[in-house]
Picture 1 (cartoon, one colour):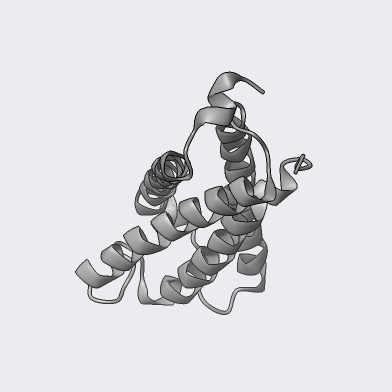
Picture 2 (cartoon, one colour; picture 1 turned 90 degrees about the vertical axis):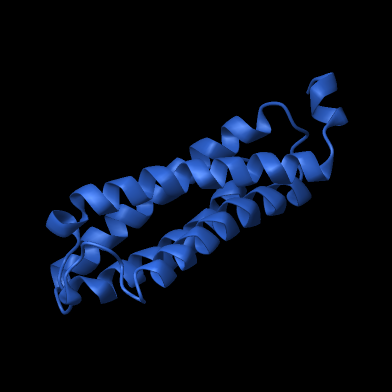
Length: 141
């Protein structure tokens, strides 16, 4: 723990978490828009469920890494983990809502048969983002 860890405000920590959330969203959205048409499985594919689970595990891993980076200069606590998890997940959810709104309720560049699987991935990934900070190690308070 450093002096920086004890002097950050909850508002500043939330803004930093939102920044991490935006960065994760940009990376994930760029991958979905560039590789999604080839990688997102079609509806009804049992093997596709495994593909989506792998993608969600990658999102979880990225969120754990981001959480560890975030906590390097902060006191680790349940409160800070909740702030980070909700900050990154809410940021992505809000940005995806904008994408869906602009694209009239469809994820851009994906076929009709890929809309259900991408929605499954997004729900699973945002749940993983909420849980990831708690899986990144033990809190000290």
